[in-house]
Length: 66
Image (tube, rainbow, N blue to C red):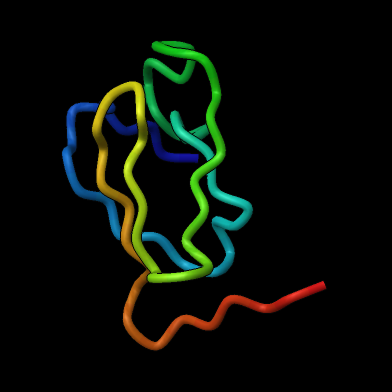
């Protein structure tokens, strides 16, 4: 798994990344703040309340229900 600095302010994610949480496991500082789950189901976008990272579902990705 490639490690990324968690300094990006916008991250595009795929359905494979769901359920989405911040920080993501591939971030170098994965423990930089408490894990918080981000809900993208309504708009395809969400913000982390701790670090302000904006997550957006990649165009064409489909969120599948249970």
